[in-house]
Image (cartoon, rainbow, N blue to C red; front, top):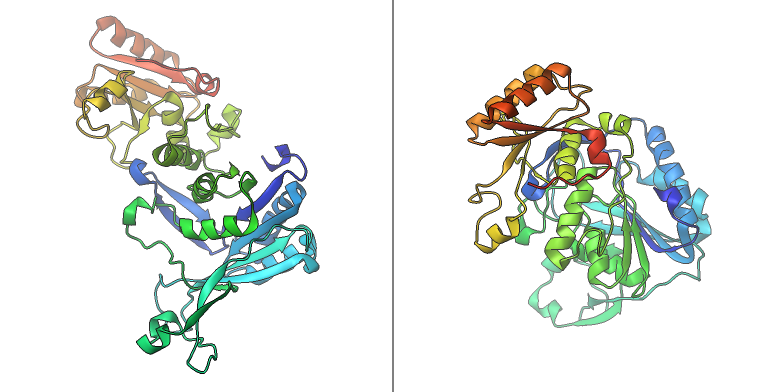
Length: 403
């Protein structure tokens, strides 16, 4: 997707890519509760750097000469990342190694507890970049010597003596998001960053109306901050579900509508690309492309992967029906990531529809066997159950289904 962005058109780039942390994340996506494996597993650091290098080269190309570049990482590969960035941006354009200290995480008896991330700041051309200095409070002792103790250790007498200084490269005043869902800020993305962090970066290195790019935007915190601060924005993520989460988030906060206020450009243009998606990713893509809501439960869902609500949904919402609870008007959706769904698949879905007390359901697959088609026609002719076959190629064409 980066190759489609013209040269020198971006004012500010922030990226928070995989950290080469050699672990898997189990993710729950907010209301949708999508559980999937997010692999942050490169093994050899050389593989990780070679994975990132072509992307950084593209990012350097699209950045304006007045632009700034922030790379968020941690201890796993930060030193190697710095060497790569020096090669691409030039060492002379390196501005800061920002230390963001937080209090979350566990302790260790084998080494000092790791309580910070590193953010490398580069200019495309040093001296030409946009930068708005910020100030922070600096507490001083009565003798006007700087007191470098952490704020939680200051006594009342010390707190009476302070002045403002230009902000320094160690940030200790922004807390990481905890595991709890405080004020609905945490959406379930494992490396989600606080909005205050993005506010600081955007305010420092861009102007109103500038274009902000986040090429690993996850659940969209950068986009939310950019929108709130009156910037234009572009977000890229490999996960189609992440893009849908961002879309919902932009609606919930700003009432921005897809296709009117912003556009989602899918990188999946063929059935072959969709066939290679991880199972849960494909399942969510299919349900959402059909216009439905993915099931909260991914294991033991009794054959129902999502629900398609009728077109009078808005009316039901006005009547204070709960979309995920009391509103009992929907059609089950079943998704199979296989070349041809067969008769046994249809039989199982029929059982699920009857168990759910429904009369109609939608079955998504790449294609269907003759026996499967015959069984769906038989059920429709008998009039008790209707199973609507939906082929993936039809969803790619963005055909709209109305109930």
